[in-house]
Image (cartoon, rainbow, N blue to C red; front, side):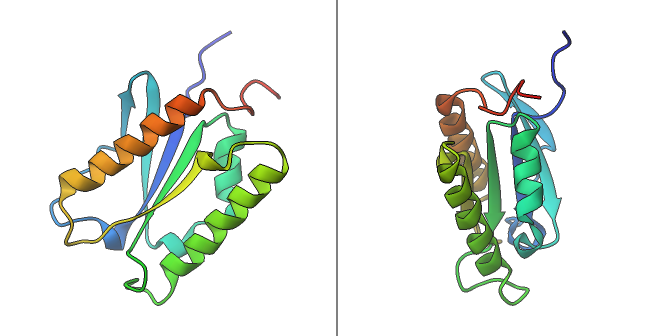
Length: 139
């Protein structure tokens, strides 16, 4: 059996909340965890279907990075993202999966690029501590 090429963690980052000068790598390995970063136009564009699809693909966690509360550049994108994240967490809990596998972070363009990367790496470490995805190898 070949090793899966799908990422263990997907990080969706709102383009509008990336700190000035931030250059997050598109993918990396952290303690054996394959991380993929996808920049999106607005966190409000993230859909529940995409989040579940990433988990069903065997991912051990998903992180969505949105603008700070009340500071979305595109009206209410971060609010919508928060509602969707809470919905996914509730549904995961209902099926017996740790809701901590889906996390919403808030970042500001004025924040330090290093701070955002540290926060993302901290979330990834928590995902690693949760262990392998319960959806892995169930197909």
